[in-house]
Image 1: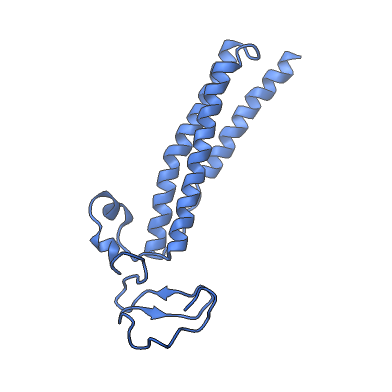
Image 2: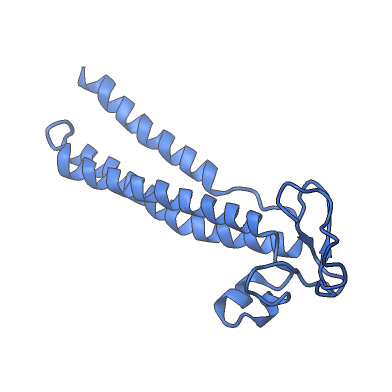
Length: 171
């Protein structure tokens, strides 16, 4: 069956693994098997969460492997948060290193520290966001509310307010 087909290829009927069920729905691909394990992950056993050891297995809390597309989308979101975190850290360093002529030392330090703290919270929080979303998908539970977005928005607003006060007071 190709990615665009909506009907299963019957030329190899009877040769599929007994725990895999093909569907012809909009998502296509393979569905969870009757025994509760996810089937269709390339290179993994159907019950791969149970086979994982250590931190990842304890952190994910069991469940079944979600569709790989959702796991990869969650990973891309995590990487976007990390990219944002790195940009905030770089901004904090840049303010401290290159804005000495624009700002007095106390304001420069305040803005730099706020940006560095936002980068720290965003970077650390992104891991927990990834983990909570991955766990929710595996347990087929509702996705958790985003905590990072309001923190980042409020932190950005604080930095902007400090700079606005500086610009108004400078004139």
